Length: 425
Image 1 (cartoon, rainbow, N blue to C red):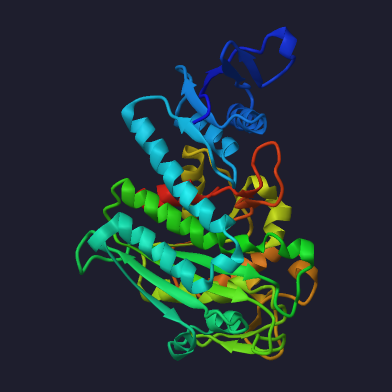
Image 2 (image 1 turned 120 degrees about the vertical axis):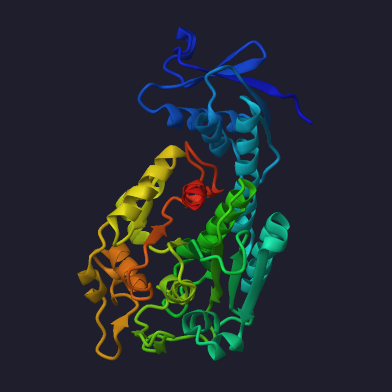
């Protein structure tokens, strides 16, 4: 192993020779100078600088490190290539929590950064189920429905989006039940698992397609959140639904103008094959509704409109229930993640009209037109049971195409902690 560098967190300004720096060096270690107005952001930036200078192994030391500041350091320090170690500080409980976070985050990061050739829809479903079963043991049961069987069971959205690929689409239905056979489902998690998104016949550009191995970020995020909650001692029943498909072009691919009839009777005209995430999530939301979940949370790298609205520093959240939005915001703040609510009103359901079906899956204009993130959320709302509390997370902050001052290129796993906290509530 390379030499381990000691890293101390301080509220003191750097020595004059370093200028207004958030990182300086003294002796055999480094000092991170926490800013007063943006303390965690300055820690994460300093961690990125350390890693960019070739430092791979660190020992965090000093009394100012708490769980959130150490996690901010972790998020700035990790890269897609791995090869790093962080020795945590604090009491045993803090170090255990950080180790669990890192383990689950690294699992999700590896899935999201995996090449699309190596991660087919069925393989994603199997990998998630195997990992969770390793953590949950006999409390985990699951089934995977794939290919033509999806159509037989009326999971029409996943089937339609995935039928253009030679590799079968799949729905993972997983039940974590530590509370007995008659226990109600407290929470249902639904994740978008598009293992590669070419855009279909609404073909993306090469630049727009390059990062689309990360379009299963929602599936990875909810899986990792459940894994973290299980290891924390989650004692209530949770169901997980991963909606997995490759969105490719072929003679069998779905086309613009097709109409999909869903299990709940809703008909959808396809006006943009690149608005596929909402089509697969609709099946998962119906399954979660059938389970009579007390709360449904879905997560998806769903729209570029959310990124335009809140940037990649926040995840956009939507819900018809103000209490759900408030809970999500409180849980996110407690773990120093960032969410921001965007509008969702009943009339948003009418913003993608169709002359041939109950609704279209988008609007036939670039990016889905104005209010695209809200319109996408409202599409999903059609498939959530009446009066069921529901949170939709548009994961604008899940992936970075290029390295920056806060993140290495690749998956961030931003959102995992928020969902895990909501499960533990």
